[in-house]
Image 1: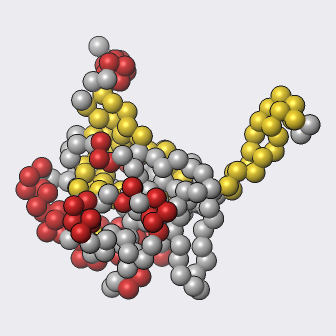
Image 2: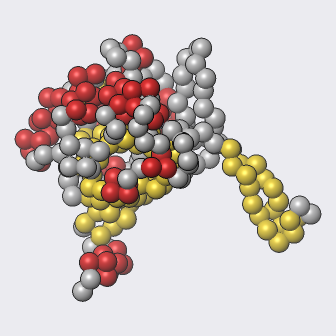
Image 3: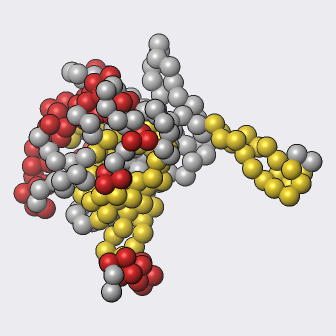
Length: 249
Ligand code: MN
């Protein structure tokens, strides 16, 4: 049997579950909110063109208004000044968009401290139990923040220390970091050195960010496959994305 036939059989039988990691995209979807004097991104919005009426008697359709970084989305290297000569979102390698994923669950620590930051020692402890991080794959950082709803964009949100962000960017084999918060960096990261270290180091190293994920809790620590589908926005710094995971049961 071909590999793809076997995969389809497995999804039908439930031997492989397809888990949707995407936050539904609507006007209430939480977005990043930067302090003054910085420009902010738009909330998602539908603009109705017709709905089986005089404007279009047999059809319903909308224009959409959205930021590149609205809802579950992919950050491209070119999003950050450190990656300004890197790839835009339309150039994301397909082998990165479909790749393996591992889950680091620090939700218990974050429940105690919303300003919790991931350190290299946490990753090393995970590796001691589960093995190396995946070459060209995704590190999904579970914090429990997907349950926070509108609280997703506050100044007290978990993230990654500057040391750990640099280590993930320069020493680890991952292609990207996925998080449950609206951005890969902690709420307090404007005050880190450097500011926004995940963005600075990871995007500067040509790596990718993935945000506002949910249902990470349904993934095992290792062995799942991520399917990330951003819009191929030419020259885009990011894009809303549908993110699916394939999980063996
Ligand atoms: Mn972003």
